[in-house]
Image (cartoon, rainbow, N blue to C red; front, side):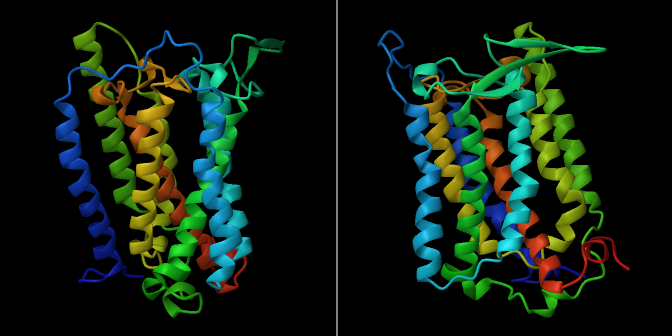
Length: 336
């Protein structure tokens, strides 16, 4: 199926979203680059943000409650429960995997007083760890604050609920109906998209180059593991789902979701989470681009929610096409 190239086409709408994002990010990046001295929180003050991380989760929980239990019924929005559940089942494990397998490599949690103090299991992520001996390796089981898992769980739900409400109600004029031939007529949903694969390779190569330059100028060693994880998590699905998602995504709704989530994440990261030690980042696993004005926030912290928003909407719309077609999964995704 051709996604179209004219004005108002899905392809044009997607490129418009990228243009608007670049229009905002470009001047902001140049401005932030001029800052040479970061703002510093007075760390001598005892417990400067008690339970701050725990309470801040309301930034996701409150929108879930408002959209799910008030705006959706009020605006007569029909949510495809199966599509919603399947999308969450596919995506939430990505956030869980990030915490369980990589938290000890990518993240730090220097201020435990900002949490409830309830540990959740993660590989080698805590000072109080238990060693499980097995053949042929030893597995170091530690913990992360339980808020970490709630953070990603509620984050994915917030992104998807916000998109569904905007798509079905606020910006429904630009939505593709579930019975529209564009949505239900397709040969197969899994279709290789070489541009996504090439973009992934280019981004990873760029991350490696940035890290190499950072290592050279600072006399340190490291690998941009977090950036590689984000690129893989966003563009591996895109390399097989993007052609099927483009014609049916409500790009106006997506753009608003992206900007709301991005602004929320910047509030969280730049003014609260990192300065007050709710979480931090392992410098050796970043690609070496840090925002000085935001307490040396790594660029990966900004990219993560762009990747989450893109990935969530794309997976949801492909799953929704499958359910709308009435075909069995194998036939829908692989063709006859």
